[in-house]
Length: 408
Image 1 (cartoon, rainbow, N blue to C red):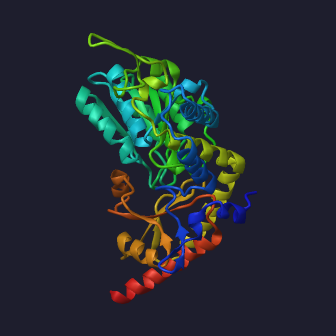
Image 2: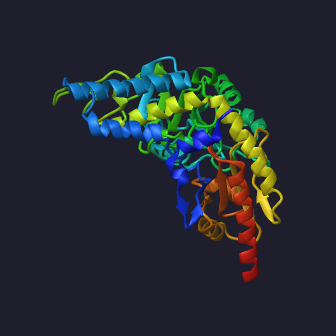
Image 3: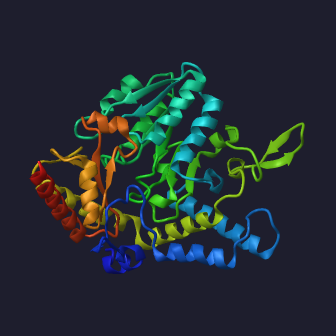
């Protein structure tokens, strides 16, 4: 079991007060907070070792290069990739998906080829494929979402055809909290020869991820969703596919030899890592992985599922509140609306009580509109949240209803 008092002490920001009230941070789907070990490790490297990686023979450069590559190996182990060169560092999930859409698309997607998305995707897993479609005259198909917030898996045989070249699917919905059966989808995609990219931005901090067991071709996630720094992301790709894909950007580090007549490109993973990386951020990612491993990802999952069940029970007692979706597996992402109250008004008033939630379309406008609304309120939990904080959200929403109801 997680020692919640010890864990919360590791996150200094949780001791802050907002508008004179204790901070209740329930916006972890947007970004998690950072534990002190991550902050301290990054500060240490800025203060004592800061020097560019891979390009120097001096002491500081060697220290940072070694730490950067150690973080790559820890990332490989964390998701059980087969080869360390299958771990590409990016600026985040969005860049990871764009990299695949651009380079894999350039190499493998032709006019008339089909790309299958789902109705619950984040904009970052929609727009890059639309841009690819427009460049190469491909076709996009959509796997719909049922009223319970789960994918209509029965539609897969109709939507997957011999023309399907790629399936892009979220592992865990950033709006509904649905944990998708990605292994099943991958197996069905394999039957028609399609490749699969999994958006793991919302899953990586909540669930054990084994890319070999999933057999996905690509898996993308961000450090800042898993207690690490902003500006750092990861793209896992199967080595044989990455070797066939052209570079994403040109510049230093991604080359072997440059002549005006011709340039030869570097080996993996550096072929996709042009320019100076955020190496201290990458070191912070490695420290965040160590923190998760020390806590235990299974323990994190179990605690968050308990919190999610409790949160749903409490929210369902509030008059006029509708939770969107009812996934079969409990998830720490819960979105809802309150009859007659705009989400932005509710979020603003909750903020005055020290409660941080997300309001709006959650960068998933097609999914939000599919449920007949233009905006939602989202509470997203992390391992450091407590039942008392869920109670504070419950009581805060009742105060919002009282206040706005009196104004009507």
